[in-house]
Length: 619
Image (tube, rainbow, N blue to C red):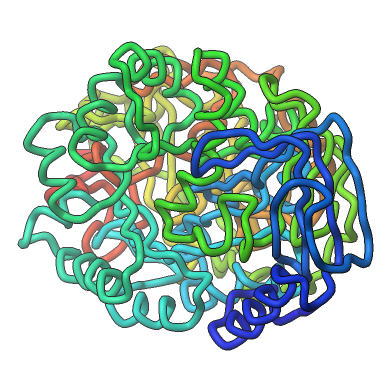
Protein backbone atom coordinates (compact mmCIF):
# COMPACT_ATOMS: atom_id res chain seq x y z
CA UNK A 1 0.00 0.00 0.00
CA UNK A 2 1.27 3.45 -0.94
CA UNK A 3 2.69 5.33 2.05
CA UNK A 4 2.27 8.57 0.06
CA UNK A 5 -1.42 8.32 0.96
CA UNK A 6 -1.04 8.55 4.73
CA UNK A 7 -0.95 12.34 4.87
CA UNK A 8 -2.81 14.39 2.28
CA UNK A 9 -0.17 15.93 0.05
CA UNK A 10 -1.01 17.95 -3.09
CA UNK A 11 1.51 16.25 -5.39
CA UNK A 12 0.68 12.77 -4.15
CA UNK A 13 -3.03 13.55 -4.34
CA UNK A 14 -2.78 14.14 -8.07
CA UNK A 15 -1.00 10.81 -8.63
CA UNK A 16 -3.50 8.94 -6.45
CA UNK A 17 -6.49 10.38 -8.28
CA UNK A 18 -4.97 9.78 -11.70
CA UNK A 19 -4.75 6.11 -10.75
CA UNK A 20 -8.28 6.07 -9.32
CA UNK A 21 -9.66 7.40 -12.59
CA UNK A 22 -8.20 4.43 -14.48
CA UNK A 23 -9.33 1.95 -11.84
CA UNK A 24 -12.87 3.37 -11.96
CA UNK A 25 -12.86 2.92 -15.74
CA UNK A 26 -11.67 -0.66 -15.40
CA UNK A 27 -8.38 0.10 -17.13
CA UNK A 28 -6.26 -0.72 -14.08
CA UNK A 29 -6.85 -3.50 -11.57
CA UNK A 30 -8.42 -2.83 -8.19
CA UNK A 31 -7.27 -4.33 -4.93
CA UNK A 32 -10.53 -5.26 -3.22
CA UNK A 33 -14.22 -5.46 -4.05
CA UNK A 34 -16.45 -5.54 -0.96
CA UNK A 35 -20.05 -6.65 -1.53
CA UNK A 36 -22.63 -5.54 1.05
CA UNK A 37 -26.33 -6.09 1.55
CA UNK A 38 -27.05 -2.37 1.40
CA UNK A 39 -25.13 0.90 1.42
CA UNK A 40 -26.06 4.25 2.93
CA UNK A 41 -25.57 7.25 0.65
CA UNK A 42 -25.58 10.36 2.89
CA UNK A 43 -25.73 12.94 0.09
CA UNK A 44 -29.27 11.80 -0.77
CA UNK A 45 -30.06 10.09 2.54
CA UNK A 46 -30.96 6.88 0.70
CA UNK A 47 -30.08 3.20 0.85
CA UNK A 48 -28.78 1.27 -2.14
CA UNK A 49 -29.22 -2.50 -2.12
CA UNK A 50 -26.72 -5.21 -3.07
CA UNK A 51 -23.82 -2.86 -3.66
CA UNK A 52 -20.13 -3.34 -4.30
CA UNK A 53 -17.36 -1.06 -3.06
CA UNK A 54 -14.22 -1.25 -5.18
CA UNK A 55 -11.02 -0.20 -3.44
CA UNK A 56 -7.62 0.79 -4.79
CA UNK A 57 -4.95 1.37 -2.17
CA UNK A 58 -6.49 3.34 0.67
CA UNK A 59 -9.27 4.86 -1.42
CA UNK A 60 -12.64 3.99 -2.86
CA UNK A 61 -12.48 3.90 -6.67
CA UNK A 62 -15.95 2.75 -7.70
CA UNK A 63 -19.36 2.13 -6.10
CA UNK A 64 -22.31 0.47 -7.75
CA UNK A 65 -24.55 -2.55 -8.11
CA UNK A 66 -22.80 -5.82 -7.34
CA UNK A 67 -21.45 -7.61 -10.39
CA UNK A 68 -21.38 -4.58 -12.69
CA UNK A 69 -17.82 -3.34 -12.19
CA UNK A 70 -15.98 -3.74 -15.49
CA UNK A 71 -12.43 -4.08 -14.19
CA UNK A 72 -10.41 -6.82 -12.55
CA UNK A 73 -10.09 -7.17 -8.79
CA UNK A 74 -7.42 -8.98 -6.81
CA UNK A 75 -9.68 -9.92 -3.88
CA UNK A 76 -13.45 -10.19 -3.70
CA UNK A 77 -15.18 -10.25 -0.30
CA UNK A 78 -18.83 -10.50 0.67
CA UNK A 79 -20.59 -9.35 3.82
CA UNK A 80 -24.16 -10.66 3.46
CA UNK A 81 -26.71 -9.18 5.81
CA UNK A 82 -24.54 -6.18 6.73
CA UNK A 83 -25.22 -2.53 5.97
CA UNK A 84 -22.33 -0.27 4.97
CA UNK A 85 -22.22 3.31 6.24
CA UNK A 86 -19.37 5.84 6.01
CA UNK A 87 -16.73 5.97 8.73
CA UNK A 88 -17.81 8.26 11.53
CA UNK A 89 -16.08 11.59 11.96
CA UNK A 90 -15.41 13.78 14.97
CA UNK A 91 -16.15 17.37 14.02
CA UNK A 92 -14.61 18.65 17.26
CA UNK A 93 -12.61 16.56 19.70
CA UNK A 94 -9.77 16.92 22.17
CA UNK A 95 -7.99 13.59 21.85
CA UNK A 96 -6.01 14.71 24.88
CA UNK A 97 -9.19 14.22 26.93
CA UNK A 98 -9.12 10.50 26.21
CA UNK A 99 -5.68 10.74 27.88
CA UNK A 100 -4.27 8.40 25.22
CA UNK A 101 -1.64 9.19 22.61
CA UNK A 102 -3.04 9.29 19.06
CA UNK A 103 -1.97 5.77 18.09
CA UNK A 104 -3.75 4.31 21.15
CA UNK A 105 -6.73 6.61 20.61
CA UNK A 106 -7.03 4.96 17.19
CA UNK A 107 -7.12 1.50 18.76
CA UNK A 108 -9.89 2.69 21.09
CA UNK A 109 -12.21 4.55 18.71
CA UNK A 110 -11.85 2.78 15.37
CA UNK A 111 -13.76 -0.31 16.59
CA UNK A 112 -16.50 2.13 17.60
CA UNK A 113 -16.77 3.50 14.07
CA UNK A 114 -14.57 6.60 14.29
CA UNK A 115 -12.23 6.73 11.31
CA UNK A 116 -11.38 10.45 11.29
CA UNK A 117 -11.11 13.23 13.84
CA UNK A 118 -10.81 17.00 13.73
CA UNK A 119 -8.44 17.50 16.65
CA UNK A 120 -9.07 20.67 18.62
CA UNK A 121 -5.44 20.99 19.53
CA UNK A 122 -5.21 23.85 22.01
CA UNK A 123 -4.51 21.34 24.80
CA UNK A 124 -1.17 20.03 23.56
CA UNK A 125 -0.54 23.40 21.90
CA UNK A 126 -0.42 24.99 25.34
CA UNK A 127 2.12 22.37 26.44
CA UNK A 128 4.41 22.54 23.39
CA UNK A 129 3.08 24.86 20.73
CA UNK A 130 6.03 24.71 18.31
CA UNK A 131 5.77 20.89 18.07
CA UNK A 132 1.98 20.79 17.82
CA UNK A 133 1.62 19.77 14.19
CA UNK A 134 4.52 17.33 14.41
CA UNK A 135 2.84 15.65 17.38
CA UNK A 136 -0.56 15.22 15.75
CA UNK A 137 0.77 13.85 12.46
CA UNK A 138 3.25 11.41 14.03
CA UNK A 139 0.84 8.50 14.45
CA UNK A 140 -0.47 8.79 10.90
CA UNK A 141 3.07 8.96 9.55
CA UNK A 142 3.75 5.74 11.47
CA UNK A 143 0.83 4.01 9.74
CA UNK A 144 -2.14 4.54 12.08
CA UNK A 145 -5.45 4.17 10.19
CA UNK A 146 -7.09 7.05 12.09
CA UNK A 147 -7.10 10.26 10.07
CA UNK A 148 -6.37 13.22 12.36
CA UNK A 149 -7.02 16.70 10.99
CA UNK A 150 -5.41 19.14 13.47
CA UNK A 151 -6.79 22.59 14.09
CA UNK A 152 -4.14 24.77 15.77
CA UNK A 153 -5.41 26.27 18.97
CA UNK A 154 -6.70 29.82 19.09
CA UNK A 155 -6.47 29.59 22.90
CA UNK A 156 -2.67 29.49 23.01
CA UNK A 157 -2.55 31.06 25.52
CA UNK A 158 -6.25 31.02 26.49
CA UNK A 159 -6.12 34.66 27.63
CA UNK A 160 -3.51 37.41 27.64
CA UNK A 161 -3.09 36.88 31.38
CA UNK A 162 -1.71 33.33 31.14
CA UNK A 163 1.51 31.78 29.90
CA UNK A 164 2.47 28.24 28.99
CA UNK A 165 4.28 26.23 26.36
CA UNK A 166 3.02 28.04 23.28
CA UNK A 167 2.02 31.38 21.77
CA UNK A 168 0.15 31.44 18.46
CA UNK A 169 -0.63 34.47 16.35
CA UNK A 170 -1.07 35.26 12.66
CA UNK A 171 2.31 33.96 11.52
CA UNK A 172 2.10 30.67 13.42
CA UNK A 173 -1.39 29.97 12.08
CA UNK A 174 -0.31 30.78 8.53
CA UNK A 175 2.64 28.41 8.85
CA UNK A 176 0.45 25.58 10.14
CA UNK A 177 -2.07 25.96 7.33
CA UNK A 178 0.64 26.21 4.70
CA UNK A 179 2.49 23.19 6.06
CA UNK A 180 -0.16 20.52 5.51
CA UNK A 181 -3.54 19.95 3.89
CA UNK A 182 -4.38 17.96 7.01
CA UNK A 183 -4.77 21.26 8.89
CA UNK A 184 -8.46 22.09 8.55
CA UNK A 185 -8.67 25.50 10.17
CA UNK A 186 -8.54 27.30 13.52
CA UNK A 187 -9.51 25.59 16.76
CA UNK A 188 -12.42 26.96 18.78
CA UNK A 189 -12.13 30.69 19.40
CA UNK A 190 -12.86 30.83 23.13
CA UNK A 191 -11.78 34.25 24.38
CA UNK A 192 -14.94 36.14 23.47
CA UNK A 193 -13.91 39.38 25.22
CA UNK A 194 -10.79 39.41 23.04
CA UNK A 195 -12.93 39.03 19.91
CA UNK A 196 -15.36 41.87 20.53
CA UNK A 197 -13.25 44.31 22.56
CA UNK A 198 -10.50 46.18 20.64
CA UNK A 199 -8.94 47.18 23.98
CA UNK A 200 -8.40 43.58 25.05
CA UNK A 201 -4.68 42.68 24.97
CA UNK A 202 -5.41 39.53 22.94
CA UNK A 203 -7.52 41.32 20.31
CA UNK A 204 -4.75 41.65 17.70
CA UNK A 205 -3.43 38.13 18.29
CA UNK A 206 -6.83 36.47 17.86
CA UNK A 207 -7.89 38.49 14.83
CA UNK A 208 -4.49 37.80 13.31
CA UNK A 209 -5.16 34.07 13.56
CA UNK A 210 -8.68 34.49 12.21
CA UNK A 211 -7.34 36.53 9.30
CA UNK A 212 -4.66 33.96 8.48
CA UNK A 213 -7.35 31.27 8.45
CA UNK A 214 -9.67 33.27 6.20
CA UNK A 215 -6.79 33.91 3.80
CA UNK A 216 -6.33 30.16 3.34
CA UNK A 217 -10.03 29.29 3.26
CA UNK A 218 -9.84 27.38 6.52
CA UNK A 219 -12.68 26.96 8.97
CA UNK A 220 -12.81 29.19 12.05
CA UNK A 221 -14.39 27.16 14.84
CA UNK A 222 -16.22 28.90 17.67
CA UNK A 223 -16.99 28.43 21.36
CA UNK A 224 -20.10 30.34 22.41
CA UNK A 225 -20.55 29.36 26.06
CA UNK A 226 -22.95 31.72 27.78
CA UNK A 227 -23.70 33.69 24.60
CA UNK A 228 -27.48 33.43 24.46
CA UNK A 229 -28.91 36.91 23.95
CA UNK A 230 -29.71 38.20 20.47
CA UNK A 231 -26.90 40.76 20.37
CA UNK A 232 -24.22 38.24 21.37
CA UNK A 233 -25.44 35.58 18.91
CA UNK A 234 -25.46 38.11 16.06
CA UNK A 235 -21.99 39.35 17.00
CA UNK A 236 -20.66 35.79 17.24
CA UNK A 237 -21.90 35.00 13.74
CA UNK A 238 -20.69 38.35 12.40
CA UNK A 239 -17.17 37.56 13.62
CA UNK A 240 -17.06 34.58 11.25
CA UNK A 241 -17.04 32.02 14.04
CA UNK A 242 -18.59 29.16 12.10
CA UNK A 243 -19.71 26.78 14.83
CA UNK A 244 -20.66 26.32 18.45
CA UNK A 245 -20.52 23.16 20.57
CA UNK A 246 -21.67 24.87 23.77
CA UNK A 247 -25.41 25.21 23.09
CA UNK A 248 -27.20 23.71 26.10
CA UNK A 249 -30.79 24.96 25.80
CA UNK A 250 -33.33 24.46 23.05
CA UNK A 251 -33.91 28.16 22.45
CA UNK A 252 -30.19 28.91 22.31
CA UNK A 253 -29.57 26.10 19.81
CA UNK A 254 -32.40 27.24 17.55
CA UNK A 255 -31.29 30.87 17.56
CA UNK A 256 -27.69 29.96 16.78
CA UNK A 257 -28.77 27.61 14.01
CA UNK A 258 -31.09 30.32 12.64
CA UNK A 259 -28.19 32.77 12.53
CA UNK A 260 -26.02 30.54 10.37
CA UNK A 261 -23.96 28.91 13.13
CA UNK A 262 -23.15 25.23 12.66
CA UNK A 263 -24.34 23.24 15.70
CA UNK A 264 -22.00 20.64 17.17
CA UNK A 265 -24.15 18.83 19.72
CA UNK A 266 -22.61 17.13 22.74
CA UNK A 267 -24.40 14.20 24.29
CA UNK A 268 -25.36 16.04 27.49
CA UNK A 269 -27.19 18.73 25.50
CA UNK A 270 -29.07 16.41 23.19
CA UNK A 271 -32.04 15.71 25.46
CA UNK A 272 -32.94 19.40 25.47
CA UNK A 273 -32.08 20.24 21.88
CA UNK A 274 -33.01 17.33 19.61
CA UNK A 275 -36.69 16.94 20.65
CA UNK A 276 -37.11 20.70 20.29
CA UNK A 277 -35.62 20.74 16.80
CA UNK A 278 -37.92 17.86 15.85
CA UNK A 279 -40.93 19.64 17.35
CA UNK A 280 -40.09 22.77 15.36
CA UNK A 281 -40.14 20.66 12.20
CA UNK A 282 -36.49 21.07 11.24
CA UNK A 283 -36.23 19.37 7.86
CA UNK A 284 -32.66 20.25 6.88
CA UNK A 285 -30.17 18.89 9.42
CA UNK A 286 -27.12 19.65 7.28
CA UNK A 287 -26.02 22.34 9.78
CA UNK A 288 -25.88 19.87 12.68
CA UNK A 289 -23.22 17.38 13.76
CA UNK A 290 -22.53 15.41 16.92
CA UNK A 291 -19.34 15.79 18.91
CA UNK A 292 -17.81 14.06 21.91
CA UNK A 293 -15.58 17.10 22.61
CA UNK A 294 -14.01 15.78 25.85
CA UNK A 295 -14.46 12.08 26.67
CA UNK A 296 -12.09 9.96 28.72
CA UNK A 297 -10.89 6.51 27.73
CA UNK A 298 -12.83 5.03 30.65
CA UNK A 299 -16.07 6.67 29.49
CA UNK A 300 -15.45 5.60 25.90
CA UNK A 301 -14.85 2.01 26.95
CA UNK A 302 -18.15 2.10 28.83
CA UNK A 303 -20.36 4.17 26.49
CA UNK A 304 -18.70 4.45 23.11
CA UNK A 305 -17.39 7.30 20.99
CA UNK A 306 -19.39 9.21 18.34
CA UNK A 307 -21.46 6.05 17.92
CA UNK A 308 -22.80 6.68 21.44
CA UNK A 309 -23.89 10.19 20.48
CA UNK A 310 -25.67 8.89 17.39
CA UNK A 311 -27.46 6.19 19.39
CA UNK A 312 -28.61 8.79 21.91
CA UNK A 313 -29.97 10.95 19.11
CA UNK A 314 -31.87 8.00 17.64
CA UNK A 315 -33.29 7.19 21.09
CA UNK A 316 -34.55 10.79 21.26
CA UNK A 317 -36.53 10.32 18.07
CA UNK A 318 -34.12 11.29 15.30
CA UNK A 319 -34.27 9.09 12.22
CA UNK A 320 -31.20 6.81 11.97
CA UNK A 321 -30.42 8.19 8.53
CA UNK A 322 -30.28 11.77 9.84
CA UNK A 323 -28.18 10.66 12.81
CA UNK A 324 -25.77 9.01 10.37
CA UNK A 325 -25.54 12.21 8.34
CA UNK A 326 -24.69 14.06 11.56
CA UNK A 327 -21.61 11.89 12.13
CA UNK A 328 -20.48 11.48 8.49
CA UNK A 329 -21.26 13.94 5.72
CA UNK A 330 -22.33 16.93 7.83
CA UNK A 331 -19.07 17.25 9.81
CA UNK A 332 -17.01 16.56 6.68
CA UNK A 333 -18.87 19.22 4.72
CA UNK A 334 -18.56 21.75 7.52
CA UNK A 335 -14.81 21.15 7.84
CA UNK A 336 -14.42 21.20 4.01
CA UNK A 337 -13.06 17.65 4.00
CA UNK A 338 -15.56 16.00 1.65
CA UNK A 339 -12.95 15.11 -1.02
CA UNK A 340 -11.48 12.67 1.52
CA UNK A 341 -14.02 11.65 4.17
CA UNK A 342 -17.73 11.70 4.98
CA UNK A 343 -19.12 9.26 2.42
CA UNK A 344 -18.48 5.95 0.70
CA UNK A 345 -17.78 7.48 -2.67
CA UNK A 346 -14.98 7.48 -5.27
CA UNK A 347 -11.85 9.39 -4.26
CA UNK A 348 -12.55 9.20 -0.54
CA UNK A 349 -10.60 7.09 1.88
CA UNK A 350 -12.20 3.64 2.01
CA UNK A 351 -13.52 4.04 5.56
CA UNK A 352 -16.55 1.84 6.10
CA UNK A 353 -18.62 0.85 9.12
CA UNK A 354 -20.51 -2.42 8.67
CA UNK A 355 -23.65 -2.61 10.78
CA UNK A 356 -25.59 -5.71 11.88
CA UNK A 357 -28.52 -3.46 12.74
CA UNK A 358 -28.98 0.14 11.67
CA UNK A 359 -31.48 1.34 14.28
CA UNK A 360 -29.18 0.36 17.16
CA UNK A 361 -25.96 1.08 15.24
CA UNK A 362 -24.71 -2.40 16.13
CA UNK A 363 -21.20 -2.44 14.65
CA UNK A 364 -19.98 -5.74 13.23
CA UNK A 365 -16.83 -4.56 11.49
CA UNK A 366 -14.93 -1.39 10.65
CA UNK A 367 -12.71 -0.73 7.65
CA UNK A 368 -10.24 2.14 7.38
CA UNK A 369 -7.81 2.90 4.56
CA UNK A 370 -9.32 0.05 2.58
CA UNK A 371 -8.53 -2.62 5.19
CA UNK A 372 -10.53 -4.21 8.00
CA UNK A 373 -9.38 -2.68 11.31
CA UNK A 374 -11.84 -4.21 13.77
CA UNK A 375 -14.34 -6.98 14.35
CA UNK A 376 -16.70 -6.24 17.17
CA UNK A 377 -14.64 -4.19 19.60
CA UNK A 378 -11.40 -6.02 18.76
CA UNK A 379 -8.81 -3.84 17.07
CA UNK A 380 -6.94 -5.82 14.39
CA UNK A 381 -3.82 -3.94 13.15
CA UNK A 382 -0.64 -3.61 15.18
CA UNK A 383 -0.45 -0.31 17.04
CA UNK A 384 2.57 1.70 15.80
CA UNK A 385 5.30 1.83 18.43
CA UNK A 386 6.30 5.47 18.67
CA UNK A 387 9.29 6.44 20.76
CA UNK A 388 8.00 9.83 21.83
CA UNK A 389 10.94 12.24 22.22
CA UNK A 390 11.82 14.41 25.20
CA UNK A 391 9.81 17.34 23.88
CA UNK A 392 6.70 15.21 24.43
CA UNK A 393 7.74 13.33 27.57
CA UNK A 394 9.58 15.98 29.60
CA UNK A 395 7.02 18.75 29.90
CA UNK A 396 6.56 19.15 33.65
CA UNK A 397 9.28 21.57 34.79
CA UNK A 398 8.63 22.74 38.33
CA UNK A 399 12.34 23.13 38.96
CA UNK A 400 12.40 22.15 42.64
CA UNK A 401 10.58 20.01 45.22
CA UNK A 402 7.69 21.90 46.75
CA UNK A 403 7.08 22.07 50.51
CA UNK A 404 4.21 23.02 52.77
CA UNK A 405 5.56 26.57 52.87
CA UNK A 406 4.76 27.00 49.17
CA UNK A 407 1.04 26.71 49.97
CA UNK A 408 1.00 28.84 53.13
CA UNK A 409 -0.98 32.08 53.03
CA UNK A 410 0.62 34.46 55.54
CA UNK A 411 -1.60 36.68 57.64
CA UNK A 412 -0.89 40.31 58.46
CA UNK A 413 0.98 40.67 61.77
CA UNK A 414 -1.21 40.62 64.85
CA UNK A 415 -4.39 39.55 63.05
CA UNK A 416 -6.64 36.78 64.40
CA UNK A 417 -8.73 36.68 61.22
CA UNK A 418 -8.42 37.88 57.64
CA UNK A 419 -10.76 38.56 54.76
CA UNK A 420 -10.30 36.09 51.91
CA UNK A 421 -11.38 35.93 48.30
CA UNK A 422 -13.12 32.59 47.73
CA UNK A 423 -14.14 30.86 44.50
CA UNK A 424 -16.18 27.76 43.76
CA UNK A 425 -15.82 25.32 40.87
CA UNK A 426 -17.50 26.80 37.78
CA UNK A 427 -17.96 30.17 39.47
CA UNK A 428 -19.51 32.32 36.76
CA UNK A 429 -20.67 35.22 38.95
CA UNK A 430 -19.42 38.77 38.39
CA UNK A 431 -17.61 38.86 41.73
CA UNK A 432 -15.75 36.40 43.92
CA UNK A 433 -17.07 35.41 47.33
CA UNK A 434 -15.64 37.09 50.44
CA UNK A 435 -15.26 35.16 53.69
CA UNK A 436 -13.63 35.93 57.04
CA UNK A 437 -11.20 33.13 57.88
CA UNK A 438 -9.27 32.40 61.11
CA UNK A 439 -5.53 32.91 61.58
CA UNK A 440 -3.28 30.43 63.37
CA UNK A 441 0.52 30.37 63.59
CA UNK A 442 0.64 33.48 61.44
CA UNK A 443 -1.21 31.88 58.50
CA UNK A 444 -4.78 32.13 57.19
CA UNK A 445 -6.59 28.84 57.73
CA UNK A 446 -9.16 26.73 55.94
CA UNK A 447 -12.65 26.33 57.41
CA UNK A 448 -14.00 22.82 56.78
CA UNK A 449 -17.19 23.70 58.67
CA UNK A 450 -18.07 26.03 55.79
CA UNK A 451 -16.61 23.62 53.19
CA UNK A 452 -13.74 26.02 52.57
CA UNK A 453 -10.43 24.42 51.62
CA UNK A 454 -7.30 25.48 49.77
CA UNK A 455 -6.81 25.33 46.01
CA UNK A 456 -3.59 26.11 44.13
CA UNK A 457 -2.19 26.36 40.62
CA UNK A 458 1.48 25.42 40.15
CA UNK A 459 3.40 26.78 37.15
CA UNK A 460 4.84 23.76 35.37
CA UNK A 461 6.45 25.57 32.43
CA UNK A 462 8.93 28.17 33.67
CA UNK A 463 10.93 25.94 36.05
CA UNK A 464 10.48 28.41 38.90
CA UNK A 465 7.85 26.42 40.78
CA UNK A 466 5.56 29.44 41.09
CA UNK A 467 2.43 28.77 43.14
CA UNK A 468 -0.84 30.71 43.15
CA UNK A 469 -3.02 29.71 46.08
CA UNK A 470 -6.31 30.81 47.54
CA UNK A 471 -9.41 29.35 49.19
CA UNK A 472 -12.17 27.51 47.36
CA UNK A 473 -15.53 26.33 48.60
CA UNK A 474 -17.51 23.19 47.90
CA UNK A 475 -14.70 21.00 46.62
CA UNK A 476 -11.71 19.04 47.86
CA UNK A 477 -11.17 16.63 50.76
CA UNK A 478 -12.45 17.14 54.29
CA UNK A 479 -10.21 14.35 55.67
CA UNK A 480 -6.96 15.49 57.37
CA UNK A 481 -3.66 15.10 55.53
CA UNK A 482 -5.37 14.65 52.17
CA UNK A 483 -4.82 16.26 48.76
CA UNK A 484 -5.62 15.64 45.11
CA UNK A 485 -3.53 16.99 42.21
CA UNK A 486 -3.61 16.72 38.43
CA UNK A 487 -1.66 18.08 35.46
CA UNK A 488 -4.81 18.29 33.31
CA UNK A 489 -6.09 21.81 33.96
CA UNK A 490 -7.96 23.19 30.99
CA UNK A 491 -6.74 25.00 29.09
CA UNK A 492 -3.21 26.03 30.05
CA UNK A 493 -2.59 22.74 31.87
CA UNK A 494 -0.56 23.88 34.78
CA UNK A 495 -0.89 21.60 37.82
CA UNK A 496 -3.87 22.15 40.10
CA UNK A 497 -4.01 20.79 43.63
CA UNK A 498 -6.71 20.90 46.30
CA UNK A 499 -6.14 19.76 49.84
CA UNK A 500 -6.93 19.82 53.54
CA UNK A 501 -3.26 20.17 54.43
CA UNK A 502 -0.40 22.20 52.94
CA UNK A 503 2.14 19.40 53.36
CA UNK A 504 -0.16 16.93 51.63
CA UNK A 505 -0.58 19.37 48.73
CA UNK A 506 3.20 19.53 48.31
CA UNK A 507 3.49 15.72 48.35
CA UNK A 508 0.80 15.42 45.65
CA UNK A 509 2.41 17.97 43.33
CA UNK A 510 5.86 16.41 43.74
CA UNK A 511 4.37 13.02 42.80
CA UNK A 512 2.92 14.57 39.63
CA UNK A 513 6.32 16.01 38.74
CA UNK A 514 8.03 12.65 39.30
CA UNK A 515 5.61 10.98 36.86
CA UNK A 516 5.78 13.85 34.35
CA UNK A 517 2.07 14.33 34.67
CA UNK A 518 -1.16 12.65 35.65
CA UNK A 519 -3.09 12.26 38.90
CA UNK A 520 -1.84 11.97 42.47
CA UNK A 521 -3.97 11.31 45.54
CA UNK A 522 -2.40 11.77 48.98
CA UNK A 523 -4.08 10.44 52.10
CA UNK A 524 -2.66 10.60 55.60
CA UNK A 525 0.32 12.47 54.19
CA UNK A 526 1.42 9.65 51.86
CA UNK A 527 0.70 8.91 48.21
CA UNK A 528 -2.32 6.59 48.00
CA UNK A 529 -2.72 6.39 44.20
CA UNK A 530 -1.26 7.82 41.02
CA UNK A 531 -2.10 7.68 37.33
CA UNK A 532 0.63 8.69 34.89
CA UNK A 533 0.08 10.96 31.88
CA UNK A 534 3.69 11.03 30.78
CA UNK A 535 3.03 12.49 27.32
CA UNK A 536 2.59 16.23 27.59
CA UNK A 537 1.27 15.74 31.11
CA UNK A 538 -2.04 15.01 29.35
CA UNK A 539 -1.80 11.54 27.81
CA UNK A 540 -0.25 8.14 28.28
CA UNK A 541 1.27 5.84 25.67
CA UNK A 542 -0.50 2.57 26.44
CA UNK A 543 -3.78 0.73 25.78
CA UNK A 544 -7.06 2.17 27.00
CA UNK A 545 -7.73 -0.85 29.21
CA UNK A 546 -4.46 -0.33 31.10
CA UNK A 547 -5.22 3.33 31.67
CA UNK A 548 -8.74 2.50 32.79
CA UNK A 549 -7.40 -0.06 35.29
CA UNK A 550 -5.25 2.65 36.88
CA UNK A 551 -8.17 5.08 36.93
CA UNK A 552 -10.32 2.48 38.68
CA UNK A 553 -7.61 2.12 41.36
CA UNK A 554 -7.63 5.90 41.79
CA UNK A 555 -11.42 5.93 42.12
CA UNK A 556 -11.28 3.09 44.64
CA UNK A 557 -8.68 4.92 46.73
CA UNK A 558 -10.79 8.07 46.62
CA UNK A 559 -14.01 6.31 47.56
CA UNK A 560 -13.15 6.28 51.26
CA UNK A 561 -12.51 10.04 51.41
CA UNK A 562 -15.14 12.58 52.39
CA UNK A 563 -15.27 15.14 49.59
CA UNK A 564 -16.75 18.58 50.17
CA UNK A 565 -19.60 19.51 47.86
CA UNK A 566 -22.12 22.20 47.22
CA UNK A 567 -24.02 23.00 44.02
CA UNK A 568 -22.60 25.60 41.68
CA UNK A 569 -23.58 27.17 38.37
CA UNK A 570 -22.57 24.16 36.29
CA UNK A 571 -25.17 21.40 35.85
CA UNK A 572 -22.46 18.71 35.66
CA UNK A 573 -20.70 19.45 38.95
CA UNK A 574 -21.36 16.34 41.03
CA UNK A 575 -20.81 15.18 44.62
CA UNK A 576 -17.98 12.75 45.32
CA UNK A 577 -14.56 12.46 43.67
CA UNK A 578 -14.07 15.89 42.06
CA UNK A 579 -12.79 14.73 38.67
CA UNK A 580 -14.37 17.69 36.90
CA UNK A 581 -11.94 20.03 38.64
CA UNK A 582 -9.85 19.47 35.50
CA UNK A 583 -12.35 21.80 33.78
CA UNK A 584 -12.78 24.21 36.69
CA UNK A 585 -9.63 26.14 35.78
CA UNK A 586 -11.01 27.29 32.42
CA UNK A 587 -10.66 30.98 31.65
CA UNK A 588 -12.99 31.35 28.66
CA UNK A 589 -16.39 33.04 28.79
CA UNK A 590 -18.50 32.95 30.90
CA UNK A 591 -15.73 32.70 33.53
CA UNK A 592 -14.73 36.01 35.09
CA UNK A 593 -12.72 35.74 38.32
CA UNK A 594 -10.31 32.81 38.09
CA UNK A 595 -7.04 31.56 39.55
CA UNK A 596 -4.11 31.31 37.14
CA UNK A 597 -0.41 30.64 37.63
CA UNK A 598 1.39 33.68 39.06
CA UNK A 599 2.73 36.04 36.41
CA UNK A 600 3.33 39.65 35.51
CA UNK A 601 -0.36 40.48 35.12
CA UNK A 602 -1.54 38.46 38.11
CA UNK A 603 1.21 38.18 40.74
CA UNK A 604 -1.06 36.32 43.17
CA UNK A 605 -2.99 34.55 40.42
CA UNK A 606 -6.47 35.95 41.11
CA UNK A 607 -7.65 37.86 38.06
CA UNK A 608 -10.79 38.79 36.18
CA UNK A 609 -10.03 37.46 32.70
CA UNK A 610 -12.72 39.60 31.09
CA UNK A 611 -11.37 42.89 32.42
CA UNK A 612 -7.80 42.24 33.60
CA UNK A 613 -8.63 43.40 37.13
CA UNK A 614 -6.69 41.74 39.96
CA UNK A 615 -7.25 41.44 43.69
CA UNK A 616 -5.35 40.14 46.74
CA UNK A 617 -6.40 36.68 47.88
CA UNK A 618 -6.32 37.69 51.57
CA UNK A 619 -6.41 41.14 53.17
